Image (cartoon, rainbow, N blue to C red):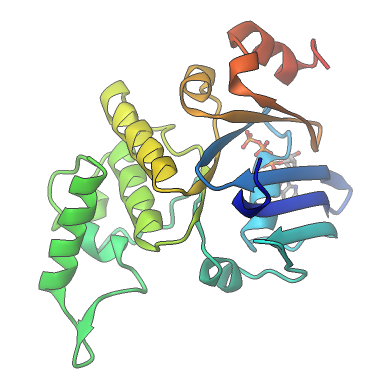
Length: 245
Ligand SMILES: Nc1ncnc2c1ncn2[C@@H]1O[C@H](COP(=O)(O)OP(=O)(O)OP(=O)(O)O)[C@@H](O)[C@H]1O
């Protein structure tokens, strides 16, 4: 690992919700050009950890640094400004708007103060084409899309933000096999472009096929970070269940 490749360092993060210790000990390092999968049973603390990293939640304790600089009070806006793009499980799309408007939400290209819909349409088509993301038309309202297509729009929006850290909470959970393989290819392309990618997944086959390393969470703790070459389906299941520790 080269020091300059490290874009995010997280140490000893803790977060409780009243009596529930959702995150007891969160440690993580993300590097440029690397895909890190975050895995663990339901309730292991994965979403809480990424919400602390993206400024959606304020940790009770711990240290986060971005490109070597400590960031003690990260907010959503600050995280985004500093290059963290996130796709949450709820996707946060605006149903009544079309695909292009959702991709560029809050970043709409404008001319003389008016949204330039033609530029927005063209840039959307270019972006979807570059990442081989398959959608019916950028003029389709997202309310008319399938669950998997909506996930694809949310990913396109995260890419459009142009950061160098991409965080995805179960990005393909609603997708069929073909859509899923397109998204996997898009994520691999982003890795090639030098992005640091962290994604939560319950799809172990996909994790083993896509990730460079796997961070295992159990009971609110990140208990191991293992290069994918050292894992197989059985050992990965063992790490998650606690049969291996
Ligand atoms: N806002 C909240 N209020 C109270 N408890 C919460 C809250 N958010 C999460 N928790 C609890 O914290 C624990 C960790 O939840 P979290 O969503 O981080 O787990 P997860 O690993 O992402 O699970 P899943 O795979 O099911 O999405 C769970 O016990 C959950 O019920």
